Structure formats: C-alpha cells, structure tokens
Length: 431
Ligand code: EPU
Image (cartoon, rainbow, N blue to C red; front, side, top):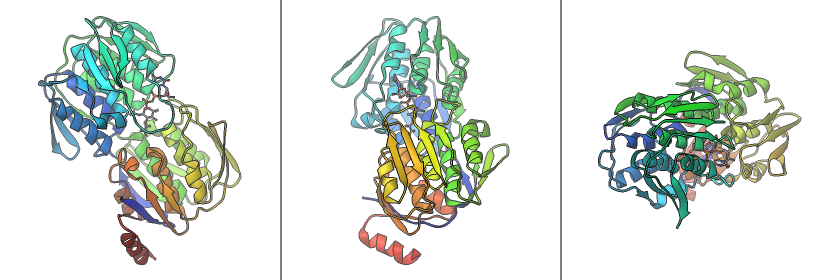
C-alpha cells in the first residue's frame, strides 16, 4: 500500500496553483446529463471522486472525453440506464446529484445511497423532502433511493437544515419542473452559486443562488454550454493553513479571495499576515500561531472542511483554544492520530475540542481517517520534528490533486513510498 513518507521541519515557501472545486464539479457533471447537447467543462480537478463519477456516467451511456487534463466534453444524448448501482457510487457523496438530474430530466431515477467520508450520520431527508414537494414518489429499497414522477411541479420548499447537497439537488431537479420553485433556508456556499451559474448557462432560470432564498422558474429544456468551474476554496484554505503551521510563506494562485474571507479572518487572528491580490492570496507566518476560538458554520461561516486544519494550527499555539464543530457529529476522529504527534487535545461532547498548545509536533506513524483530516495530518507531519509515515492516503487523493507534488514544490520533504525499503531510502536521502 502506498504511503507518504515525510521529514518535517521545512517551512513551506512559494506559489501553488489551486485546482477547480471538487464539490462544485460533482453536481455540475451530474447536471450536465440534463441536456442532450454537448457540454464542455473546464477546470475539472483530476481527483479520484471525479474519476469515479465520470466512470459511472460512461457506464450508463454518457459520452465523456477529456480534451485536456482539466477539460471534459460530455454528451448525455444516449443515456441507456437510469439505475445507478455500481460499487464506486456507494463510496462517494456526490453520486446523489444524479438523482436530482435524472428526476428532473427523465422523471425517474434510482441511485445507490451515497457514501463519502465517515464524519457523521449524513442524512438525506431534506433531499427527499424536496423531491417529494416537487411531486415525486420517493422511497428507499434494497439500498437504492428511487424517485419517480408523472410530472414535476414547482413548489415552495423550506429546508429544515441548511444543506449544501439538498439545496443543490433540489435546485437541479426543479430546473426542469413546471412552474416556479422557491427554496428557503438554502445553503449559500460558492459551489451552490457555481451550479446555478452552470445551469443558467444551459438555459435554466435560477435567481438568488448565494442568498438563503433561491427561485427557480422551470424551463422545458436545457442546451449545451461551455463552463469553467470555480477554484477550490478548501484546497486553497489547506495551503494557506500549511503556511501558518510550517511558519512558511505561501501564495495560493487562481483563487477567489471573497470565498476565502472566513479563512483569511482566522489566519489574521492567529497572527499570520495575509496579502490579497485579484486572484491570489499570500500567507506569511513568521511566528507560532496564537490561540483562538472557532465554530464551524454554513457559509459564510468558517467551513467544517477546514476544521481539522485550524485544529492542527491551534494545537501549536500557546494557551488554550476551543474548536466547536456544529455541522457534523463525528468530525474529530483524527484527534487520536494528532495526539500521536504530541498534540494535547480533549474532545468533549463529541463536538468541542479543547486544545492546549504544545509548541512542536514530533513525527509518528499516522493513519488517515477521512479526506480533510488527512490533509491536516500531512501538514502537521510537515511541521513536526523528525520522520512520519501517513497511511490510507487514498482518502486524500479523493479531493486533492497532486497533493504531495504541490507540497514538494513548496519545499516539503514528502515522498510516495510503497515498501519498507523505499521508506529507508527516503530516510537516507533526507536524513
Ligand atoms: N443534513 C441533514 N439532512 C439532509 C442533508 C444534510 O440532516 O438531507 C445534515 C448533514 O447530516 C450535516 C449537515 O446537514 O450535518 C450539512 O450537510 P450538507 O448537506 O451541507 O453536506 P453534504 O452536501 O453532504 C457537502 C460536501 C462536504 C462538506 C459539506 C458541508 C460534497 C460532495 N460534500 O456535503 O465535503 O463538508 O457539504 O460544507 O459536496 C469534503 O469535501 O471533504 C466534504 C466532506
């Protein structure tokens, strides 16, 4: 099994190009099946979750061609199966967007219950409530979510919980419903706006995405388009925190600084300097992080996906910091791994981490429990004294393109190793 071998201690310095947003690309690819015309999508990240959904789409008759590494041509004019039950789709979260897309276009969809990282119970009741409000009959049978409608009728839907996935999924389906749909208490994340912009570029009529009320006037048909996905806010935030944790100087390029505001605010609070230009942000950390408190919230609050990253920074800060996770009930599973590197963190009530800063991590053998925690643990290891090995890196590859290569470009001593011999070679080389 491949692992990362890391020798910590180098501050990360330099520029890093940010890829397209995985969590925008997944729904946009699914939504692209709603037109029979050809769609070109640019800035698609080359990560394994995207490969999986593209393979599944090929398997049901969608023509998919990479015209470049980050540009995909899709044509869904010959879909031959509305039942998506392959194993790969059980593993990722974004598979549920095929439900909204097929229900909207074909008034029939059957998709395996979605998986994704094990960070909480991750209910889908708000998706199902939304589809039902549009007139679909929806039920779960043999592990599949099945949705069917004679016709979809626009409706007024109040989301009981702010959910990125449910907002996007219902918005996708409602695009081809009859009449107007209003989604209240909708999620405001940049990728919700990106999906709405994509659909509008295909002829949809969606207004208000990015606010908590979205209005969708159903249209009869969507057409082909060319569209570029927004930069990945979480990948950018990861490298910004990598600068903070390793006392480095990193410029993230190809970002939208407005999307990064809550992350920038926290970096300033813990003592980093952040410089902003049109499409890049530079983070300089010349001293150890300072203590603070943070609570994860829906956008524009501090993102839950960044929670492990800020915890890794605060565990090095002098004094006591508190991190509260308000989105998922099981997102501190990485804390025991961080403890192996010397962190002093107690998790209380499942949602609150009380962190006493330790000043320095020491290298250890670490196992990754989920995608974002995986990136955070790698960054902790890069700042640690001595060597670390990180296993289960397939989680990281789900959402970060060329992660170790980008880190290495910034001066990190990190290598993919497969055997004990490879690891010993790495130790000799970097020793
Ligand atoms: N929720 C419900 N009912 C629903 C839907 C959600 O109770 O029908 C709850 C969830 O259990 C959770 C909260 O609402 O407690 C928020 O869930 P949301 O639907 O917003 O999350 P998601 O769509 O399942 C996406 C990202 C996650 C990211 C969250 C929050 C994708 C594929 N995943 O998940 O990304 O953490 O939004 O921003 O877009 C990641 O990329 O590593 C990742 C986990």
